[in-house]
Amino acid sequence: MSDLTTTTSAPGSSYASEGRSTSPMRARPSSSTLTTDRGKTSIADSVVEKIAGMAARQVSGVHELGRGTARALGALRDRLPVGGSASAAQGVSVEVGERQAAVDLDVVAEYGVAIVDLAQSIRNNVIDQIEEMTGLEVTEVNISVDDVYMGDSSDDNNEPRVQ
Image 1: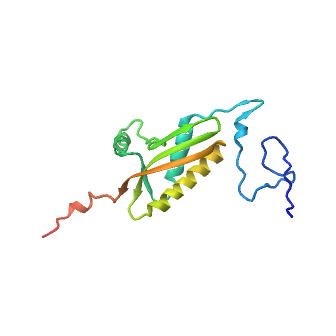
Image 2: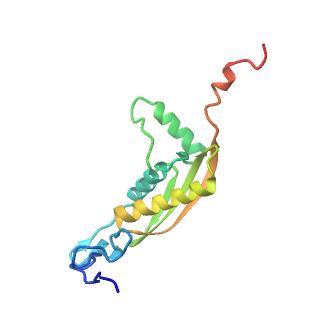
Image 3: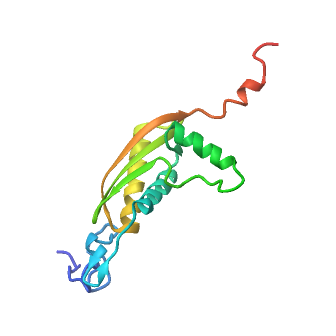
């Protein structure tokens, strides 16, 4: 028999009356907290895109996000003296509803990384971060691995192959 009660102290709260979580897992804000009797909280697509982009970049084995053209424009933007910071949302597109979000990511993996494991790690981190920070339920995270980063090839070509 469990010693935890399921009585909540406030509408939308996930904590028991004794201050302990009713679930062994980390409590997440419920989607009902986005619309209450005191008002509505709306979260812009760009906010969710940035959260997803930062969460994906935190995973070891992700070299960059974005397709070839976007990465080329990002590299050019990085070289400019003014406004030279890459967008956190590069390579990310989202659809955000009132209570749910769906995410699409374009990823460049580092060479040698198991892509299936990388995709699962990205998916888990993106879902955790979005749900924790926004209270939205993430319905899906689609990952497209568009390229593999092989390292900087310009250093290899500096030495002649034969002498």
